Amino acid sequence: MTKVADAKLSRDGERNFLWAKAHMGALTNLAEKYGKSRPLEGVKVGVCLHVTKETSVLIDALLTAGADVKLAGANPLSTQDDIAAYLSTRTDVWAWRGQSPKDYNWCIGQVLGARPEQLIDDGADLHVAAHVEKAKGIVGGSEETTTGVMRLKAMEAEGKLAYPVIAVNDAKTKFMFDNRYGTGQSTLDGIMRATALLLAGVKAVVVGYGWVGKGVAMRARGMGARVTVVEVDPVKALEAHLDGFDVSDIDAAAREGQLFVTTTGQKHVIPYSAVEKMKEGAILSNAGHFDVEIDVKTMMSKAKGVKEVRPNVDEITLPSGKRVYLVGKGRIANLVAAEGHPPEVMQMSFANQMMAAIRIHGEHDKMQKRVYGVPAELEDEVARAALKSMGISIGAQTREQREYAKSWEI
Image 1 (cartoon, rainbow, N blue to C red):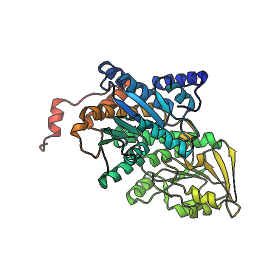
Image 2 (image 1 turned 60 degrees about the vertical axis):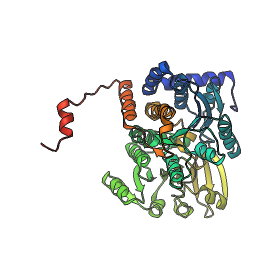
Image 3 (image 1 turned 30 degrees about the vertical axis):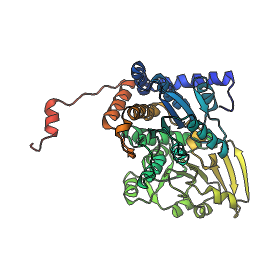
Image 4 (image 1 turned 180 degrees about the vertical axis):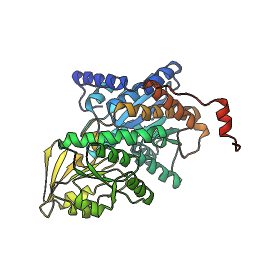
């Protein structure tokens, strides 16, 4: 079910679906290819993703390949209601913006209650729920995010993973583009939509220098911000330094920063003790999957006052009387305050998801109960489809070059 599903909203969703589809040639080309053979004919696929216009193109591709799709949203605040309304005319959807935690878990339960054969997830909430409820009949699945892969690998390490999972997040055609260019652009898009403030000249602090952190730092610098990176990994800290960014710890950065963006997938990388050190008017935001990177719970419990001053911006008055501003209640800013990643990068992430679903269906009985990477041949197919969609042609190695690459002689 969707909370709102009137005809006008559905028409708006269809227009946004068509706009995204026109910019996701890699996925639509693969959908056209596999729509002829329909390799997922009759396969029930449970999906838990951010319900955005880009996701609607993946759902369309899965349906075209023959799948019976059951969809829930991957975040209580990320669903675009017009897309949910449109997709509900084509398949079963349990998603709406502004869910309570109880609603959110209920929606995931509805997907599992439909008894899917495989799962496509973003953050691993659906996978974890399937294991908690001992959902039967699931032969495998895939995972979209860094956070979700971390959770699934922890389950594998404890011997609790009940079926094989392909880590789409670990595909180069995903993390090098989606995490870096997609999150880099869309996070700043969300912050600027929410605050309407000038980024040029701002002292921005990016917490974490993985692929997401690199993207956010690069885009913030490109718009004129003065960027400091906070990192606990010595190699990544050295990389950030040589990339030209200031590098610091969170306590020192808290005293100087004006805008903070967390990008780690870890808990409390901005602890409340750091918030206390921040300047009047500091803005806090998160680009990680879950709302745990900033210690929002402690901050709210100690606040003298909290009020919404703009859509998706809460003013929090600290015990000292200083005010800080929280974007999207500490949830993922690019989806709460904006529209998520641009379609041009999501075409690759979701092409990997489609290819993973086809691979799981065909080969799950040969796979162990562990987390797998995306096979190299599938990555190549996705990359070539993306290049074709962008009108780019590349050459190929000659036989002589292939043989030289395998030889120890010069």
